[in-house]
Amino acid sequence: MRIDVISLFPEMLESAMSYGVTGRAIKQAILSLSIVNPRDFVSDVHQTVDGRPYGGGPGMVMQAPPLMQALGRIKAEHGRGYRVYLSPQGQRLDHRLVKKLSKKPHVVLLCGRYEGIDQRVIDDEIDLECSLGDFVLSGGEIAAMAVIDSIARLIPGTLGHDESAQYDSFATGLLDHPHFTRPETVTGKSVPTVLLGGNHQAIATYRHQQALGMTWLKRPDLFAKKALSEADLCLLNDFLKQYRN
Ligand SMILES: CC(C)(C)c1cccc(C(=O)NCC2(NC(=O)c3cccc4nocc34)CCCCC2)c1
Image (cartoon, rainbow, N blue to C red):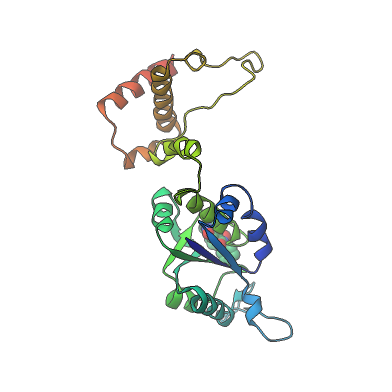
């Protein structure tokens, strides 16, 4: 899979993407990543990539020509790609959308700065606007890093066997069960006894029940996308009884 990012701050992306899962995916050549800087496509002495907004108002807007040329360079070298503009106006990023993007052979991520980019680039060149959430960011780069990391994990071969098994839990749409590790006692509190024994079936049931309970208490909205079996409902009921006592 290939991802091209268009950003005025390439070093932000390069450093963040050279660690962990993404760094490994690139090293294993299952992910090709390149960062293109629109500033490389302007010839004026000040290397202007932004302009004052038509209609007045505060701040600056990223101009279309450098962005169009950056898109054109990527297209000439690697093909058009599926073009995503990271934007507060965008479709909310979730596991479903990440899965969809991870199946594309080539994705181009466009990061905004200043007050945003010229609307004509969005209207004519962008396939999808995508948002990380409802908060103010200074640029789309941090959102792009989140997209790249979540996609990289889904590319076959990126995660080792044990890791991918570990992360299937969220793929089931539930929150994670609580995690514990040594020391066994922390400020006088010990680990749930079922986890200290070797009964793998009991441990799996405990973890599933905790995931159901945590999701019910913290993110009931996730159940809207997930049907619960009779067994799940019993486990959840039992969890809530214990929780209330
Ligand atoms: C949502 C809210 C609070 C109502 C809002 C309303 C209006 C503007 C912003 C905002 O933050 N403008 C700045 C800007 N943000 C982003 O790029 C951005 C923000 C949040 C999630 C994102 N996911 O991808 C990209 C994202 C970076 C500079 C270029 C213009 C976009 C926010």
